[in-house]
Image 1 (cartoon, rainbow, N blue to C red):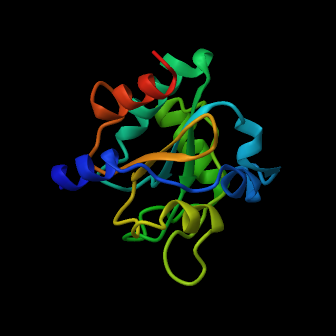
Image 2 (cartoon, rainbow, N blue to C red; image 1 turned 90 degrees about the vertical axis):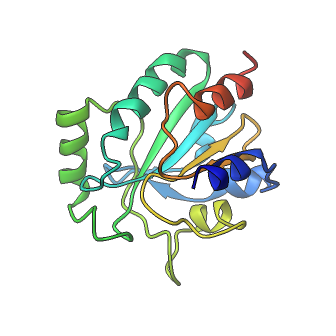
Length: 172
């Protein structure tokens, strides 16, 4: 899996900026949104789940968000119940879980489907190079709105290749 993560991280993606930024989204509170709300930021888009073996990564995602938010970086969480039914709760339950258990302050969005025929358009664009395999896959999007790299579930948010790629995308 590490080889796949490294290979995916090294591929340069060419999703058009306008396509990603124009896709309609809903926040976890039900408000209309889009990636335009985070224009000129480096983004780490993550499909999250509250009952997954990788759920502990919320801590690393929050730490990464805190560390680089003032420099133009944000983690964006997209709850998804497609893998093992590991995100069964409502948006309100998910929000409560994330804030009370992991002190999540990064933007969270409404539950999405990222597999099958009802795949959310954002994930349809992000997965043009291959389907998401499990919860906590990560997509690094540059300030220009283009996909830079993709990381598997086992790639830790802090201290490794993801953090190095974030720093590089921020010009550090």
